[in-house]
Length: 328
Ligand code: DP6
Image (cartoon, rainbow, N blue to C red; front, side, top):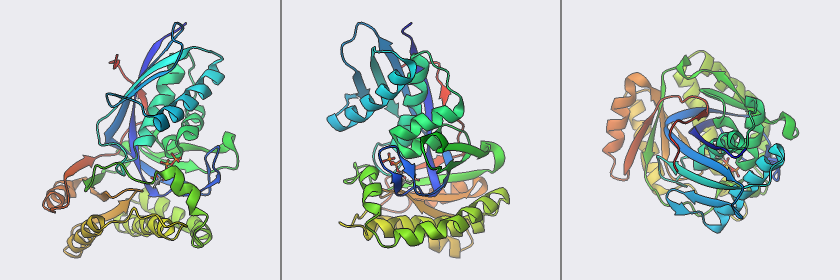
């Protein structure tokens, strides 16, 4: 029975990054990663499977999907069709409330929302683990946007045991991610290519070896609400992501002068006594992590930096959920 379904999903910021796969085709990562969902960076997606349709129709942000986006979404719809054993083509419409491809992980919220909306529209009600496994195959980080709050992606060894679980609910800690947006341009090299290139960096093996200790530090700091300990670990991890990217062959520079200026500013505020730490994604924007009591101050200071075009303050977000209002 064809049905229409809408889902809303948060993006997430990784405290320990996913960078490099042991199985690129299935997106089985080299390491566990830990993230926080972002309540103000969401994707809303409506999906309807329609028997009369002879092709999938995909609109993203008001425009028809380009060839690369289309191929990735159709491949994901094919996964859902295979699970539900249906043939119908779909109409898909998707809308972000933040700029796409600029280092706020739009593929995370996009494939999480698509997974939930499409499975429901196809008449499936998957348990959270299965939904996370499905989302992972669309975009690795999307598996972490299925559960709520603070989330760990268990790397696993094969598709069936590579999924994300919530390790603490959104209310567990009043952390904030103040995103300082320095560019809204689409990045030149997407993360999928970055993951592929990572193994050419001779620092990658060293990173993977060091990660179990860092993951433990992040878990401990999170459970203890210890911002200084969390901050030290996430800054190390963010710098390492860029180190691997820059030492890949050919080198990838997500690192930019604007980004470094924001990082330097944050370090100066911290030296002044403000509790703020940075993390980065595969893009130019800087995520300033602080407690809620300091978020206004951090946001105000970020807005004063001339390179910063926009500031988005995020609290820990909830799990992917069904939406009431369809986009079509
Ligand atoms: C730097 O999940 O976007 O944001 O699986 O190819 O879609 P694909 O990659 P993606 O990679 C995210 C990389 C990161 C770190 C992270 O979110 O863990």
